[in-house]
Length: 340
Ligand code: F6P
Image (cartoon, rainbow, N blue to C red; front, side, top):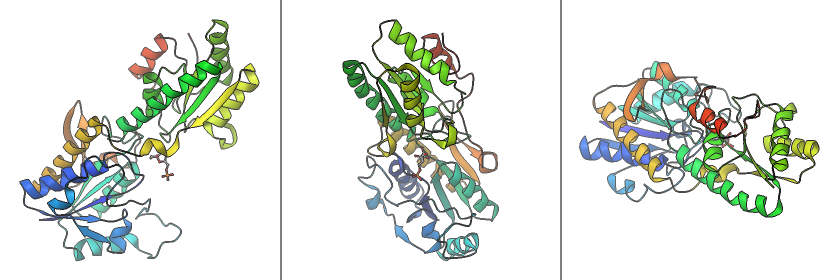
């Protein structure tokens, strides 16, 4: 069998570990031939591929990013700069021209949606979820998330020093798109006092009161962790809006930090390496047993799979009754809707 691996969408720590997991299992256990598709689905349009013998899979486990390159090209959407009209048709033809028996699609929600549409077009596809945002529906956790939470937590730890020394309110904006997973987990791990998630509607009065009541209790500083996807008027940047509002409403010295792409870069944590490796190995197993049209996933700490039809287009958000939210609330963390 000959299989292709493509990584698409934003990069994240652990993609190379997943490529290695798929490739080594496919080659060593099943004697398959493996090729990598370069630069996301663009590589299937312009036939930009590379052979991935076992030797090329050595030494990549710890590397951040993706050795294959990636892009945000969406095969089923018309985008500016498209060089061909019927992208799905060209991808289908090139899949056959390359002699592929299956394609592993490593990516987030958008990529899993594409994977499902390619499966409907008759290609043998297996989805493999990744993203720092942890918002892929159908899997308990995505690799990349743990690494991003570690980076964000480390940043919050460091901000505590300046917050304490200068008696300031520190607002830190973390990634996550419309999901608050990174904000929630790094906020709790970093001891944030106020955590704002896109999923929980906040009231600026409640946020300002929480900061003031800490000051009145003699706590000289506050750490406010905000998810980039919180709703702000006129789509203002999350940290910028919250920081200005706190300053105006409390008069306390406030500073903002936007963590940005540092959360997506660098070497994956041990946990992400293990998850990516296990998902990769299972993707190769699914191909060997011809179980196409599925996405590999982690459910109750077991690696399994779920039909792509069930995943496509859905986003996994932080639930209103998430236990971590409740536990944090009980310790006095304010989520901007009400405070203890
Ligand atoms: O999906 C991962 C993510 O990093 C989001 O958290 C963020 O909103 C987005 O990608 C940024 O995307 P881009 O790479 O297009 O700037």
